Image (tube, rainbow, N blue to C red):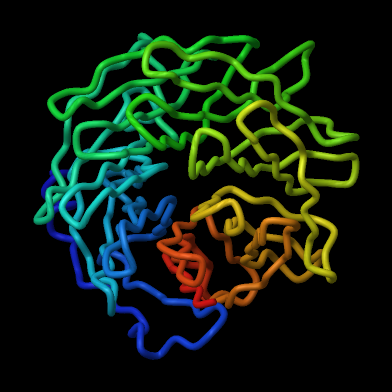
Length: 373
């Protein structure tokens, strides 16, 4: 019955036409699946300015007031967003996506309340569930994925305190064995520039403290890298990474100081990681960054949110110009609760970010942001 309900709730999504966008940021509200109680976009990936996919998940109250979550997908065709359907797996969370063209995308996450890994593939017409391995007995999560072609993708995550990595070869997904330098360990994001080079980031626990974690794939093995942590951090986690080559990557994340959450960024130059200073909007002291996309070593865009005490949470972007980060404030469709979870840039003057907001009736709804530089 739950699968039947999920199949019946698809509706078209509407957004602001691309021609309506000027320079800067503009929000695009999307129509959620019918009967959904909350819809969140967790990822976005653009293969060009004329194709993006933004997967997420929504909840519906089932029998005996139980809440179930299902995946939902939106595609951008160069002028507007539309619903690309849903898949019927229950208790599903989608966390990451990667598209190499308008006919190939991968979305990853977990389902059955975090028990099993999840991957769905887009073939240009529809999304299809694809079998994935589960290295742990009862706890497996995929959080990020990066594809360089339709025959080369890497997905990362965690389960039972250990890192998870797996590889798509065009036919099937197979498990890799990344290191576990801490207890526990988490991989949150990954970026690949070729079939023999990927960088994954996340966190590990060392001496009881959560600290940043990064590792590289050379086509054969994963190797842990030494990473910095912000001064005064009580805990720190790298949430996303974007690489343009084997000698340039940027990772972003959040660390907790004594006064609350703060964003940070770190840069890979091919030899080592170094911290970069990230400034918040002037009216706040709290914020975080959960997504990043780089098109060159002189342009990256980060996406997240910042909090104004007593007023709410608002969408935030961070732009890298090759020298420094600058805080930007995208539009906010919600009055007091807005958050961007991911961003994808097709060029230094063209990006899409995705997330969710809460409307005046307290309903969580999906939205995207368009950046024109």
